[in-house]
Image (cartoon, rainbow, N blue to C red):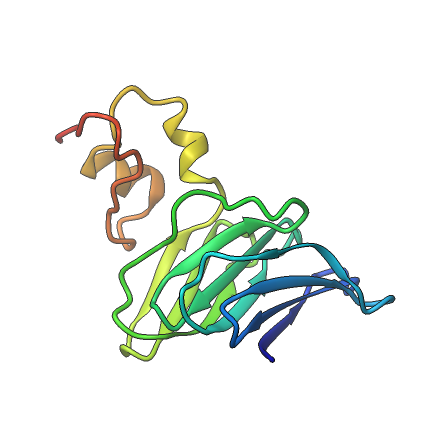
Length: 156
């Protein structure tokens, strides 16, 4: 059974999240699933959203995680965003697509960087991002997260 739905910006696709912990992308005209079933959530997928350009699908689950995937390939874009302590009840992309907001039953709203996958950045770095660089390049309002766990930590 599907729990959450969102149309792509062009209206041709629909993304759904389910009680079965999966995310699926559908062709609206044919009603058929596009690509593989997207897995990774361990509990109910309560919220889904398409980025403004239709390239990224975000999903939020009852485990408090937010996941980003390429809507065309299903490939996960980086590690899940964590920090909520309860269910992720809603997701919304900023109109320019650079940030994603998540609302949770833990009474918080969090902002996440959505314009680039952390892995893409980590492939170009030799040390993890410093707290100061995070504030300048990502946002002073988004809590710093380790982006590149395999790289040495950098200090301000």
